[in-house]
Length: 257
Image 1 (tube, rainbow, N blue to C red):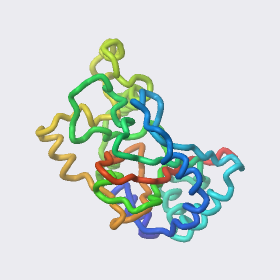
Image 2 (image 1 turned 45 degrees about the vertical axis):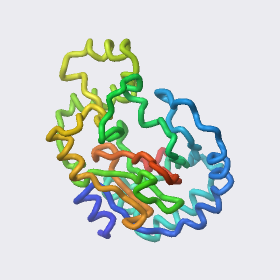
Image 3 (image 1 turned 180 degrees about the vertical axis):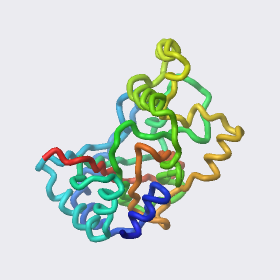
Image 4 (image 1 turned 180 degrees about the horizontal axis):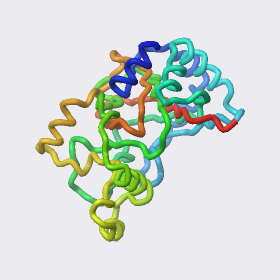
């Protein structure tokens, strides 16, 4: 056992501090290029993030993944994630360099044509059974919209069939037009669930208060490396108010080798 595994077991998330100088050196050119991009008018459903670049673990990005492996293994994070995931062969699938700015719109993709929003916008669980790691490459303050997680939510239990539909609905239909919502409403009520729940939870309700009180915002003083269970724990990227958030989102999955 180690602190990462104990925290994952108890809370579904673990934050710590790691060295990021080598990672940033490898990615500096990509960071500067993404920061120089003109902002999109709007990030449409299915387009991912406003500013991002994917680095698959396919043999072409070895310098990045070797750097990540050295630092994460040194702190026992990779072994903890594998043990938590009950896997002997958990490995890097890809890393996504994501730069979040105050003019982002990616978090509006679900229900994009609706004016009503909520304090919990973006809160979700992922559809796939993987593990994820967030690594901050700059100082992340409250104004930079830090990563957020609801500790303990990985232990919440739901009807398995409803959860399966909720995860499928979240990837297959962003409910961003009246027509898309009409299609969703043709399902029986128990199959209309959606795993991108945040915008459905109205401000001032007991459920909203419950989630907001338990949500933890992981600024850099808490840690610049956060490993978590995305397929069971409720989480989101915060919305930037002023500063930028430069981070790597690393996916760990069962090795296919």
